[in-house]
Amino acid sequence: MRWSNRGPLGCTLGLLIGALLLAGEGIAMSDQETLCNGIRLPSPWPPRDVQLSRQPMPLPPHVASPPSVIPIDVGRQLLVDNFLVETTTLRRVFHAAKYYTDNPVLKPDQPWEQADGPTAMVFSDGVFYDPAEHLFKMWYMGGYIKSTCYAFSRDGVHWEKPVLDVVPGGTNIVDTTGRDSATVWLDLEEKDPRRRYKMVVYSYPEGAGALSVFFSDDGIHWGRPVARTGPCGDRTTVFWNPFRRVWVYSLREYLPAGGVGRCRRYWETADLAADARWKSGEPPLWVGADDLDPRRPDLDIPCELYNLDCVAYESVLLGLFSLWRGQPPDRAKPNEVLVGFSRDGFHWDRPSREAFIPVSERYGDWNWGNVQSAGGCCLVVGDKLYFYVSGRAGVPGSAKSGVSCTGLAVLRRDGFASLDAGNKWGSLTTRPVCFSGKYLFVNVAAKGGEL
Image (cartoon, rainbow, N blue to C red; front, side, top):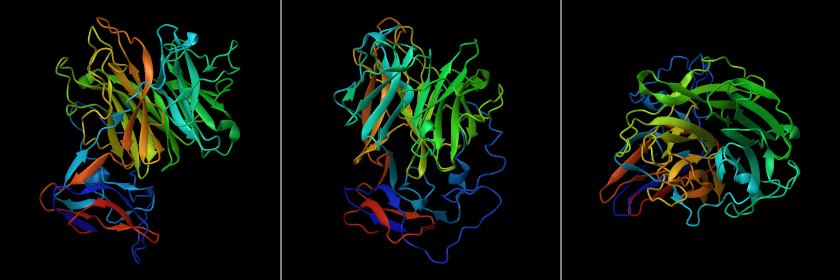
């Protein structure tokens, strides 16, 4: 497949949707697990020999050496890397999400949200759309590291805090576990209605930090935890990888050696609660920040990976990398969110190191300090993607969080990157692809060009 173009309009490529039968094309099988995109996973999996350092990690193996023929049946095919690209003279441009003009969309305006600091923010937690009830649903931290609360919305912008019966007195609290990070996941594939909602909460009731695992049929009444995981750091989260049908724990680690600092370990399991009793150091190392992540000029401190939330988006695994850029003495830590992409669920391509959802540099803004992602990462709303993030207003002259809220950032659907020709001729030729439908759709603006 080849296209070319010239002229100031350029060539903006967002996706391929595969749906045309290529007769006679077969995918060779082996004893190794083969993903829907043709990538064969090495054995053992996940890799056990990852060593993290400040040196940039090499290209993911599936980008450096892709399958000879790439199946594109599953999901829209995003041209965010060279996995699908054989040759091109086009320039890849990455696009940041744009903040909603009337942020924040959720503020700490209830008495129980004032405890130890006014807080109504997603600290991962989760934001999902429930098609059964036609509602957007949000779980968030209420009061600083105090409780987990619930809100709902009919449009994803205007949120209501219902009066629930979990805590006497009429609050929207759904869990009173003292907490740090948490993740709530609306599992639309779950067959058991009692486990439709899943929640993991980091706490340290016995002095050792770990996650408590909860299930619920309504996302409001959680009962007692069904499992306690192995040890982990406080900013640990979880996500579902439907390409391989596994739950993945994104485990916070700290490695002083080599200056890596905060980074991630990896643990996967088919059942969120049944196989989560890892031992200290047992989960393999996964990913961290590196020297390609630019330092803030005012701090000049190497970046560290504070958190990694992930979700399957179309044909890729989307990763939201919350980067720690240092701790000023007079400002809340200015963490911000960057984006990465994975084709196999483990190895990451992070071609853009610019902030995808940044902090504000203007004191007084709701997100002057410490912006971090929500569990579930993003929602498809019409032709847009909604990204919910926490933002801390900070306190001048202090490292405290100040008022902590939830905001919204928006991106055109599939609009993470474009491939642009500019004013000159440019062309792109894909690698061989195969698919099993009837039609092929390509998102290309090539006025004066050809496909």
